[in-house]
Image (cartoon, rainbow, N blue to C red; front, top):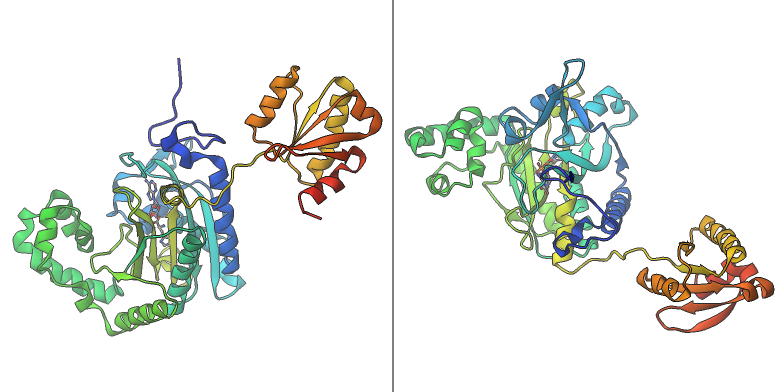
Amino acid sequence: MTYASPKGTYDIVPDELDSSLKWAESHLWQFVESHFTKIAKAYCFQEIRTPYFERTELFLRSVGESSDVVSKEMYTFNDKGNRSMTLRPEMTASVLRAFVERNLQQLGSIHKLFYMGPMFRYDRPQAGRYRQFSQFGIESIGSSEPEADVEVISLLFTILETLGLKNLTLHINSVGDAASRELFSFRLKEFLKPKLHQLSSDSQVRFEKNPLRILDSKDLNDQAILQEAPKLEDCLSPESKEHFSKVLHYLKALNIDYHINSKLVRGLDYYNQTVFEITSGDLGSQNALGGGGRYDGLLKTLGGPDLPSIGFAFGIERVIQTMLSQGVNLSQKPVPLLYFVPMGDRAKQECFRLASELRKAYFSVEVDFACKNLKNRLKNAEQRNAKYIIVVGDNELETGKASIKNMSTREEKEINLIQLQEELSIIEGIK
Ligand code: HAM
């Protein structure tokens, strides 16, 4: 019997032999994750980690029962205590749950949190869409000012730009405050009522549950009907209009290009005011690298203080896939700096001792102890792309000196084994 990973999942491995899966090589993930962390810290965000599963009720209350994520895509199960649990489909709800439970509001007025890790959605798998996928995201809790929106969007752009990504489009819209959305829903329903039977079945359901989401419909007939529909921007309250225009003003000042997309409403129910998405022309049909928006009021719904908040999340798979398709991969596969080839038992012991000293100083060192034939061992070192190689035999043990060979230039240099760390640092330009 052979086993395969569950549909919609993948393995992250050091070397991927299938060229279409190169994005699943672990060095890329390490590079991108540490890059996210560095930039998030530069913006003074701090990490939060929460459990991979939560009580189902949390997602029903926050992400919303009318969203596709909750109504169709959740991995929900009863645990042995017969409590309904769900593998997290996203992190915003979990972050807010933790915020309330850990009383984090006591620690100040603005709370800037980042996270990364696996999420789970039972969706139809295809390129760029998985059942277990990873997100990097941030939540900025405590400010209703447009500056907070801009800081979050600017962080997002700094991450993408410093990764070298190009051809990205920032789609932005305002879905307004509760009053704006209520007015728009009313006008939209009035407009659609006589045409209800012509709408797709999904939009007919949304008509009752969440009319705003009809704007999101991919159905061409729905889109044609919507051409003449009332506009969301005409229903924005003066406060919402002012907030949005300040956001756009600051984005301009930061030279962040945007495209106002008046149909952008996002798929999760908790959004209000600013919403945004980043797309890449170099991804296939699943072209959203990330998205987010404001969700003022959600924290209060979950039993916390009434603090306005905004955040976003990226799909890490999609970011790495875009990097590779744009040829802007800055990550290098790790290779051994030094490869020892010991000849005989005594040499093996000495090489292990030398290697362990160097490894304590974070040099990456390999000792080839498995194979006997010198030719094969040299081939192994080549295959592993080792930078330097040292062969240690009786002569080297006696004199304490060995020859270190640079595998790419083929240059050899005598080196003192007693001061190996020192000499290696000099060769590498560390000292
Ligand atoms: P979301 O738009 O549902 O937002 O997901 C954010 C990103 O996660 C998407 O743009 C996409 O890159 C990635 N993603 C979503 N589903 C999949 C999937 N099945 N396979 C691969 N990638 C996927 C949220 O999750 C919100 N919590 C974002 C947020 C944070 N809003 C405010 N704060």
